[in-house]
Length: 233
Length: 233
Image (cartoon, rainbow over all chains, first blue to last red; front, side):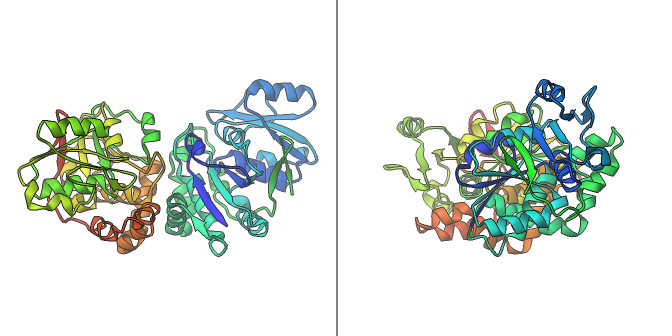
């Protein structure tokens, strides 16, 4: 199994995604929300690029979710908190969502054989799934506005580390992500709390979200993109 | 002191270089050569983008150095080995050089207040110099054809780690580079020998260069760009 890591959407053109499992990682907070929602019984989540597309789907009966620059879009049903996604009222519902970085990354993965959603919350489930698939993997960090971020890189490292027995071929970026994860494994919540994005979000009073997203293996679910919609496997 | 890390030239547009010390890092092998040359008495080194520019400078009396895809350019006086740069015949001489990644990175740093050349070979000298300068720093990894590489990221991490007492503000990329370096500090030569680029170079039989470039603090020299030419401080 060939496992590559892409640190930001600005570098994704360097990767050939055809025939591969592309794993989208946006720990703070898009993919953590998707995992928490799917793990709590949301029927499907449709990631879209714009607020306008989200509103149009809202008129078709979707719940509207999303943030811009860390804050809930005005008039939307949900923001971008994994805690909101677990509320009982979304059980069996369909959600349309748009976020700054996560949905951008998903849109970049068009060529992939399949698109898988990962976060620390479903770390073991993703590792187990990829191990069974035995397909080549690109771990794709959503980053922040095109920049490198540490929480997504750590999660990529955690997945690659979990796959290490299966990996036959790797890259410098994958090796570095594994070393990074191993260095931070025992202080994950602390490192993520000190990250650039956690600092930015702290002004919105969402420290609870950051702590929540640093937890490993809370949900045993693997959301996969099918016809533009995420559904649990 | 604000210390940032840029992992590849493809991300350098994300950084504002004005008023900053930009530290160019191309461990395998451009900046290791520059440091070895300057540390061994070469008078100046002029980095240029193309083989043609190098040839034109050759006609003006410069020694011509450079590689394309890891191999010495035909008819040139030197390739891209730090061992060659230390030969007595280059003492007091002026060298023009062109390489795949290192000279590209230098060309991207036009807006910088100053351009400094770093490698593991002059790690302590660079840390000491930047500590005295007290200017904001961008550690700029040359990468490989626009891709992330581990040896330059490790060197950026080593410099940031050395500056940690001086750093007042940092980024996720800087923190990750520091964690990476700390994880690999005691097995640096081994990690670099297993890097993608070392593997690529191994087919050219230059394992000695790789081992050489993984050494720390061999030269107490800081090459700085002045009017398009590198000279020792």
